[in-house]
Length: 291
Image (cartoon, rainbow, N blue to C red; front, side, top):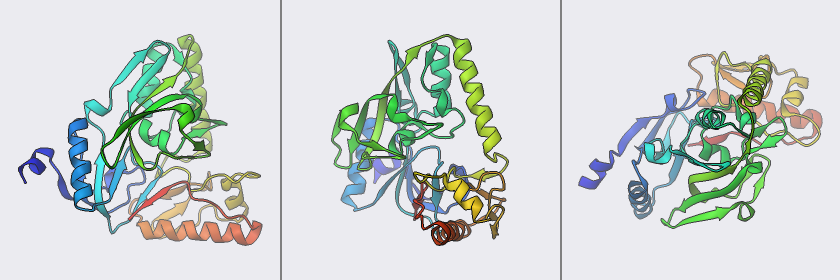
């Protein structure tokens, strides 16, 4: 149909290079809508055809099967979905904005509160969906409202108290996030710059950034970090195919160049099994699997 051509829906589109771990097959359908109107058209088209919808951000915390994704993959990367506006001491931004760009904008406007997200290779929408965080802080602590659209095309703005956040999760999974407003605080640029530098140094010290990876594989249990438990199982450096557990941080799986999704899944299952057998703790995955 002509409107499909105008929307530039791509068939069997490669996804591997759109993920931070550089693994994955193709999307049956792939599109980057230019605005809200096009997004609505895509939602209605997918609903009519009973086609599952997936939203791709920066591709972190994600493992895509080498067999690909049997659905419509949307990426909200156009100017419409990546705008940033200053609202007093708040910042309102589209869900497709990269966290690094958002932090830079806040720094330029002498606003503090986002620095703890420094070095996380994600988008605002993905960060909100999974309640991204580190060093004892998370994105739920700065959100004041989120604008969303459901898979029936209905749009609503949810206030913070209407959203349920937990450790690396939210109840927003039935929505596509459009934009969000964050409540920040005025500060001086030097203080913010020092915070950013400190968080980046912490990340570089604790994580292996040499190889492609998807971020933390498992959520941390209450009593001990997942990385420490996996390390105590003597799995650091364990390799299957071209995928291996980081010798620096055991909760990371690294791609040596040509790893397959099955290699990563086998390592994930091995990590879960060893930790369960040794400590009777069931590790819960933090990364998402698309297939």
